[in-house]
Image 1 (spheres, rainbow, N blue to C red):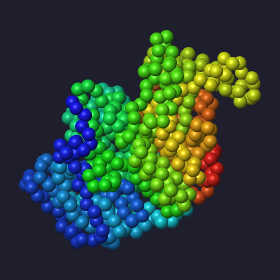
Image 2 (image 1 turned 180 degrees about the vertical axis):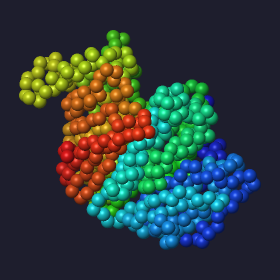
Image 3 (image 1 turned 90 degrees about the vertical axis):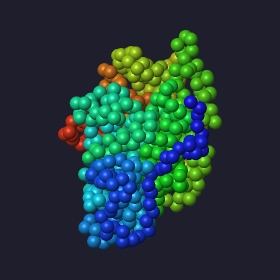
Image 4 (image 1 turned 120 degrees about the vertical axis):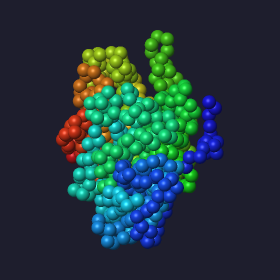
Length: 583
């Protein structure tokens, strides 16, 4: 099929981005129970998918719900209310809007004219049925502390969403301000695909009408509907406002601007698939569109008083060039054509953010220079993660099941010994030094595969003199690293979160102990300070005027209804000094 441009797609498509209403205050509409219109057989069964709020500002917040009709077709009148108290005696806003099949019966309200730093309660009502009550909050104008729960990579068939439940349970005791979801809110694979092997035993199989890979708008909508039946996910959505970005699996694996690893021949036009996936994303999540009819732009800013400027980036969909692949640089003797690889890795034209987003980020940082912390919420690892080439290639062989762990274990021991000797001031032979110095990026899908783009981005913060913290997801593992430029200058720190349920590196290592590899990586990768390669969980990231610190929490199992919460390490970075310290 010919490739459609975005403009062509919008011309031929009847899709829109979801019903959205803007409210400025009380209207008196909430006294009515709400009535069905259109198809007389359409009536509400229940609010099967809960409620949610998101994109909080100091004076506004997005509210969301979905109505489940008995029969598709027609429309349903929905009333909603916002109050300062759980009993809804102190109403501040109300209104009425229509849910219809055109938007998959989702409704979104941009509630404005709210007070800063204030907790609010909200609910919906249709055909005499009330939704659960949700709790949300606006951002403060001044504050001494910001505390965010950070999550990523929630795979329904792979395991239970205990991380969501644990965060909801701690919302008050931890004084959490918001949830940051850094992508892979859902996965596009069908049954029999990635991480579905335990789904039947867990009671988390994909339903028959949605058990194949997602390709159409209907497919994506049904997958969101499945995920949003999860009670732990509903609980956390109802408890705190969320700030979200997509990664690749909201469309398909290893996506870039005009294609993806998991978009194959016979699956239609990628651009059409992408925009249908993003259509469903905007319908099902409480995200505020950047502009009317713009369902592709998700980079945006949030300001937490005078303390934190949070810039949410899109490193995946709108501008990313295709990922490089080591397999394309293997020459006839089985070695890598390193000169061609390095040339492509350092190509200054390779894009991850794109010109428009880069200019926006420059402006956003300039406008928030007075704030103590600049924070980037984005998808993939930004830190430099280079490993000795020999070790990396052997690691990839183990991942692919082409080699056992014994050879890799021996190589790890050799390289650690070399690194330790070097640190102690021993003189290494030319061959030994060459082995240490010949390094390759660990993950070409991360910023390591776009080094010029990383240099441009870090330069913004270095020139601004900002206290920079980058938050990342994607890898299903936990990391803490310094962020350095190519000349070695440290510019900021990165805290990366493990997954909610998607398997981590431990599932690819065979007989190699994941803790052994994690410890080796912290020795062999100069900027890496901490790694956990085997546990699912979340982070609580805390900002004060003195420091930023990340606390990792892990779930002992996502394969059982019963679980225990494990407190992981805490790492901090002081304001005014680019460093990482274990607490």
